[in-house]
Length: 379
Ligand SMILES: *Cc1c(COP(=O)(O)O)cnc(C)c1O
Image (cartoon, rainbow, N blue to C red; front, side, top):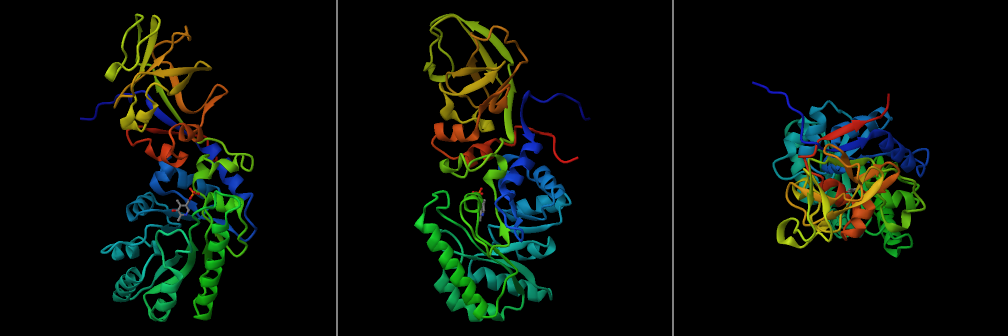
């Protein structure tokens, strides 16, 4: 028997208007022939892949990228039938699923090409694929020399249709990087080599958020923005180039409010002692939700237009704030931990800087235990 109940008062508001604003910011850098291949991997960087993809669809986007087959199937099952690129490629045994769900793998190595082509030939069809070049990322994809040697075989593979040529930039967030120039040069010469071998992919793409807002690639037909769509800067140097809005706003409500006398220890390890009689607000959220334990004794929240300090260690399911200076605080009041509230902000980029990581990780760590609440979006 289903019993109705309200959720624990911890959630993430996802502002779809901000998402669309950021998409338009990305598109400012596009040339007229270029389209967005919006990256919605890792559950759209924690924002919810299906609602985010639907929002982009209604804004006219019809090309999407995810990391894994499972992520692609989630979109297909939700009825999203646009072009869908699986950046992680096709692992052994997944070939039939790529055909069944009409997915395009990033083609990462000769073995993957042979496997996919054989599986497609068996079914009498061709799998569209994006040939990935390692132009200097040093991670995945065909190294140019390897591709040169493999080209005669690739030309013979009847089960594959090379519809895209792609690469990934390692240092595009450094605006004067020689690495990027070198990668672009290698990418261009691979493109020429393929042309000479009779392979002319319809789509060409190499730019992530940093690339598309920092480097011109006129031959590209697709741009692959990720982080900037979600309001994160691709790097510190982009602060004045991009006007982005945060999309995710993490909030939790005070569920216990108590006054601890001066000298009380708070949370595991007692590495915080109250220095005065202290009103402590306890929120039902913790590191199991992606609220990083490194915030222990140094996190902050926004309550009634004021910044308040986190005290004690972050627990798995609870955190504590000192709200002594917010006399109107009461049980049920919401505290913003990430995003905007009442003119104040705690940005993903601030989290990242404080915790020595990148905003990407901040967003995609906000876990599945935190329900997403969608606001705004196309009408
Ligand atoms: C994640 C990813 C992107 C998007 O990168 P951002 O830095 O988030 O814009 C683009 N291309 C590939 C291959 C990726 O893996």
